[in-house]
Length: 227
Image (cartoon, rainbow, N blue to C red; front, side, top):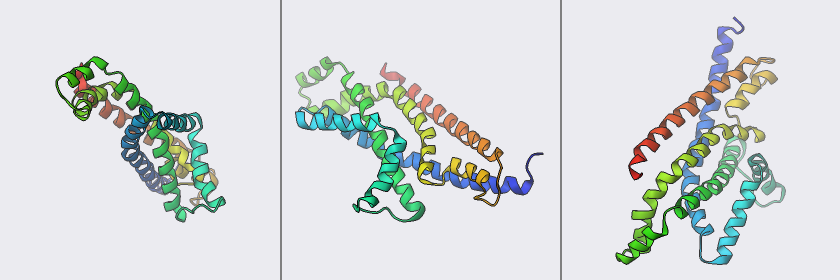
């Protein structure tokens, strides 16, 4: 046996603690990015040209730069430029990471929303106007329902990617699951040179990704009546 019972208990406790932070990043990102992405998509489709182009430039910049760079810049630059400081310790790191993730994924989601909305035939919207429906009614009763069905597959891919992207939080020393696994190699947990805990982190991601995939597949099947 290549590890003792005491080592395993210590590693399991540390990885569980890190995985809770991973889950926190994941759910906060979804809660914030899903509605924000819809708002951004409206801006990118606005008839007001300055707003439309400004929104698309922001989306282009966010999607065109690495998320890891955005995390580093958002966490360190405000303090270096005396703009504001994040709360100290893990709270500040978690806040900065979640803000970076929400903004990044909202921009990606916005493009998926925009494609879904614009993919609904214009004729259906025109038919709604002929029937006397307001644009608000058309969006919620005609466009939105069909859009949801169209965006589930690409949105699922982004959500699964989010599961793995949470590991980028370690770049500012946020103690998520991979940071915890790697710490046993560096001696931060009272042990050093232990490689096997890092491989155990893969189990967490595989199980988490598997559960998310099953849930999203079920959602897609339930929306099959829109075909």
